[in-house]
Length: 217
Image (cartoon, rainbow, N blue to C red; front, side, top):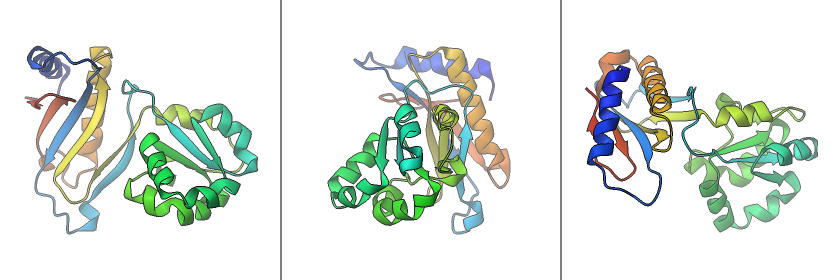
C-alpha cells in the first residue's frame, strides 16, 4: 500500500460518488483469508493510535467518584457520578442511549466493579465498556486530558467471527494527506496483528459513507 495508489483510489471515490448534503466518512475495508476463527488466538482485537484525528470529535463519557469529578467535568463530554449509578441503571432505555451517544467510556478504577455490575450488560454488547487496554480505567487521581486527547485518534479493530475489518480513517472534509497517512498506519497495524501478517490479507478497499467500495491496487 503506497500513497500514490491511495491518492488514485480517493480520486476515484470522489469522481464516482454523488454529492451528499453531509460530510461523508472515508472507511478502510480489509478482507482477510486463511484465519481460523475457531481458534481464539487467531481472533483480532486491538487498539491502535492513528497519526491524525478522523474528522469528527470523539465523545467521551466518564464514570467517576468524588476524587475525579471536577477533572472529568473539565475534560469529558459527560460525567456520571457513582451515586447516580443505581437510578440510571434502572432506566435501560437511557443506558442504551448513552451507549449510542458516546464513543468511549472512562471509569475510575476503584468503582470499575460497580460500572460492570450496573452497565456491563448493555455497554458490553456495544463494545463500549471502559477498557484497560485503551487506558480507559484510571486511578482516582489522574490528569484525564492526555487520555481524552489520545482517544481522538484511537480506533479499536476487531475480527472474531467474520474475515473482514472495517474502520473509519477520515472524512472528506480532511486534507487528503491526513486520510492517506491514517489509512497506511491502520493497514500496517492490522497487518502486524494477523497470525501470518500480510499473507492473511486478501484485499483492501476504501469507501465513502454512501458509496460503493473501490479496491486499492
